[in-house]
Structures are given as structure tokens and as C-alpha cells.
Image 1 (tube, rainbow, N blue to C red):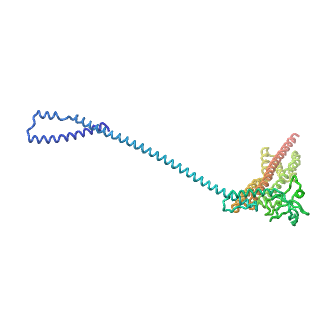
Image 2 (cartoon, rainbow, N blue to C red; image 1 turned 180 degrees about the horizontal axis):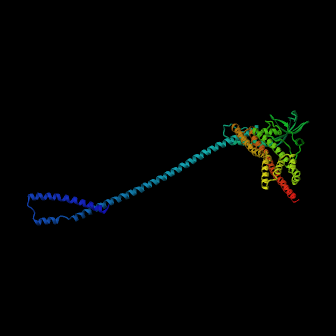
Length: 474
């Protein structure tokens, strides 16, 4: 508290206290005056002398207030110390509780991890059981009568795999042996013949009869047929004689259940047909491009072949100043070179700069003819690979649709989309590469022809100028 305010408060309290003391004294004095005599002067002086002064009263009151202030300050300090101690204790309890919460959360996380690991272990065990069951079923199908898989609902046991490995070992032993037995098989013309069948395990066989012999292939239903191949007859005869040839020519197969047909070579039409609609479009563009290349070659050959002949035919006439005769000579020829030379001869009387501009303009007019079909050839060469890429994407989409519907069990179902994917890309490159090369070569040829035409026109102009100078000098 401010000392000035404390002093004012003390003054007010002192004044009130003096007022309270004065009023009883005054009332008592009045009663005493009424009942007794007035005090003497000496008694009045003693009363005044014994009454405390204002300063002393103020000091006593100030000391009292100071004592009260110290007491309040002590109580406040004690309260603060107790509050701080209680706050520290509460903070300690909070920290302990937070530690407990963190520990509980960590334990809960560990429990969650253990539960997740347990679930993963269970899922892995189930997956392994499925894999083992599938392995046993596949072995049952592959080994046929040599092994029988347990029921699909039963969990595979070690004894099942012991039986599997035993059956596989026996099958391998029997499959690695060469055996001979009498039997029937089909010849190349489809007739059934009887003879000896030499089996190389379960992967190959050879047939020997009086009329035919050679390597055998599956004919379906467990039957054999002769497979047309070079060397099969010599191998079959050598094995029948008990010999061990250095090289064995055989037809290896997996099963006798399905017949194996010899794949015939595809024709060009069949290859294009396997590419679908896009394959035919690319082929059509390729034919159009080839036709345009042939047509442009004819144009450029006609334009380049007559250049030297025209210059030789009109050079002497221009030197002599016979411009009309030179123009009549040029009328006998056709083509871009003849038209450019005729334009140059008609304007020989103009200034040299103007004449060169006229020749350049004539060359620009003939450029459209020389560049005919060039841009179309380049466009076809650029579009063909893009069409091939489109066919590839279309084929892959078709393949994935088949996989989505039927799975990947039968490769024949996937062959259509794969054929489109590969054949269209092949056709696009076959069309694009030659056309791109031919287009660039023909463009270069056209530029050379333009240069030759310009040189020929300037040569005619120079011959005319030389002729004029000679005639002037003569």
C-alpha cells in the first residue's frame, strides 16, 4: 500500500477515535457541572495536561496499523508458500499421471503389434496351407496314378509329402528309362499301322513298322502319330538296334491327351488379317505411299533428264541473239526446265537484277510441281507408326479383357489380342521406314533439280550477254 494513502487512512481513523472519546467526556462534564461546582483552574490545567496529544495518538494508531500490515503480510506470505507447495505437489501428480498414460499407450501399442503379428502369422499359415494343398493337387494331376492327393478339406500332413516325394522319385526313375513295346500309331497319310513303339520315358517316342518309322507326336486320346522331321528315322532305327547315337532327334511332349498339329506358315494376307482393321488401314496407307513414291520418281526423272538437253539445244541460238528461234526450240520440249528457260529468254532484255527476280519467281512456280506428293509421303511415314501404336494399345486392352473374364489358363484365348498388339506395330514400322527414307531422298533430288534449273537459266543469260558483247566488239 502507498504510504501517503496509509497516512490519510490513519488520520481519518484518529479523528474518528478522538471524536468518540470527546463526546462522552463532554456529556459527563455537563452533568458534573449541573450537579457540582465548576472545577478550579488548577484542575482544568491538570486535565489538559493528562490528555494525549494528536501526534501521539497518530503514532500509536500508525504503529497499530503497521502491526496489522505486518500480520497481513505474514499471512499472505504463508498463504503463498502453502499455495506454491500445493501447486508443486499437484504438478508432480500430473507428471506421474502423464507417465502412467504414456506407459499405458506404449503397452497398448505393443499389444496391437502383437495382435497384428498374430493375424499375419495366421494369414501366412493359411496361405501356406493353400499352397501345400495346391501342390498336392497339382502333383496328383501330374503324376496321374502314381500319387493320390488327400481330400481338399484336410490339412496336408508330413506323410502326404513323403508319399509325394516317393511317387515322384519312382516316376522319375521310370521316366528316365527307354522301353520298347508293340503298339499302333498313325502314319503321315493318316492310316493306322502296327509296329514297335520305343518310349523315351514320358517325354518322347519313336515308331518302327515295315512301312514307316520316325519320331512320334501325340495324336490325342493317348495315341501316337508320326511327326515329319529330319533325323527321326535314323534315331528310331538306332534305338531299335540297341545303339546309343551321339545326337537324338525327337519330338518332346508333355501329355498324350491333346493332339498336336503342325503349324503352317502364315501367308501375307493372314498376317495382315491377324492385325485386324488397323492392320488393313496401315497396309492400305503403305500401298498409297508406294504409289506416290513411284509417281514422284517419274516426275523428277522427267524434269532432270531434259535439263542438259535443253541447254545444249538453245545455248547457241541465244548466243547469236536468236531469241525467237530459241523459244521455238523450247516449245518442242515439255517440263519445268523448259518453262523456266523460256521465261528467262523472254526477259533477256531486262536489267540483270530484275531478270534474276523473274527467274526466281518462275522457279517458285515450278516448285509445286517438283514437290508434288512429297508432303503426303512424309505424312504417311509419320502416321503409320502411330497407327501401329494404336493397334498395340487396342490389342493389349483386348488381352486384358480376356484375362479379366477367363483368366490366364488358356493361352489361345489371349492370342488374338497379342496378334493385334504385335502385328500392327510391325506393319507400321514396315510402312514407315521405307517411306521416310524414300521421302527424304526424293526431297533432296527435287532440290538438286531446282538448283540445276537455276544454273541453266543463269547460264543462258550469261551466254546471251557474252553474245551481245561479242557482236558489239565485231
